[in-house]
Picture 1 (tube, rainbow, N blue to C red):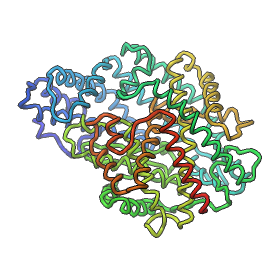
Picture 2: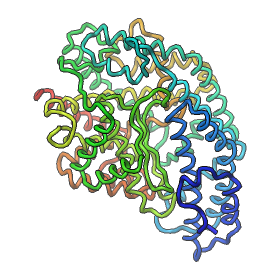
Picture 3: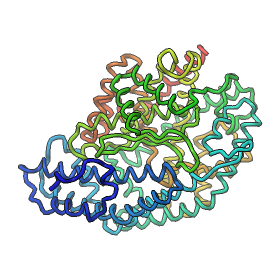
Picture 4: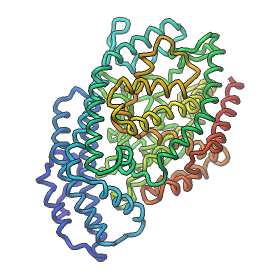
Length: 568
């Protein structure tokens, strides 16, 4: 009967649970033996691919336009009906497969995943998980509606970022304060939403019979290879190594700008008085030059990106009503990725497209794996795929190599990116440490004022070097503007770990780029068939939390910054 299922994802978008139910029932009822294992797993994979792609396409619709009520209605209908029913049926299939004792080749890690998911499943959590996704969509609506009037025109907050590069300090301060005021206007709305998130997650934890939400989320995120204690060690390593390095970056900037104090609106302007980097005017230019860069790295990667352009799998421009941030989603029925971002013509947009393309290339590299369960990759390595791609592409930012800049501006872009890397780790530590505090102290964290105080405490610990005097309200509410905190709790340590892994890949590429790239692509192609440490090792790196490994990476970055600074 599975031969009748349409393989065109667009035809699936109107399917309801009544369309899917007979296929799930067939798998539940069908005898499962070694002789038919491949067919059974292939059919289960097809159903999983279909349900997952419907979810992804509906999410694309509601984030592309947060004001689209039809898209919101379809998404909510999915969350209310199709999602919980499919998850309940999927649990029966997991139990059936695990009880069989069968194990196909390259399935050791997927079996570990299935056991973990089956263990935390509870039917009472299905409507709660649906509600959690609805709350996440509400957050996107709040942020997506934020605009300001600037010089007689309505602007999104992302569009106003270009002013932060202005050499007129008063001008950029004015823009920064205007944005901050608009964000603070939604403080109460986000506080109210936060309380709903917290109470919902408390109930999910109780149903799963786990000691706290962190324990639940650890299993949900399939974190088998490290613990909360490892995260704490990483925070300590960052405080020892990265915080002093970040301070050196901030101090170098302060001296070059000739300022007594470095303020939040001083962090983007070029400290040597150079005009802002202006890599492109239109999104088409961003896309076409990205293709040239990818071609320099590996022609196959450029071909992957061209496929995305030709098939309309890129939504890159910023516009009113669009959700914030950027992402790359996997569309498994189509065997394609989809990239979403908010480009406004600044260098950060270049880094974003290179980053998200790394995720997209990961999708293309795993499509050879036959089963859905083998194509699920931990975020800790998925982010290595994206961050390493930024570094692989760095030597090709110059116009003469197909990129965006003169040789001098390309060097500037590389230097600024490496400074971002150093200053990012302390910020990552703030975000991750905050989330551990929240779910270890959930009663206190259900009061947003306590969250403000904790964020301010962590900010002062990990983020010295910038003066926030008189901006205490703006600083302490920073947790509200980090979408990962309300929407995808505990998803942030991945960026810090992956940045360390990506720098190890980059170290290898500086010695032998073809060999490093070959190892990188081979690691990507493993998908979810290897453990996290094995994936890092295949890419030529190691999963690490210690200060010594971090120091090696920071030293390499700072040495390169000094080299680039001397040239400039």
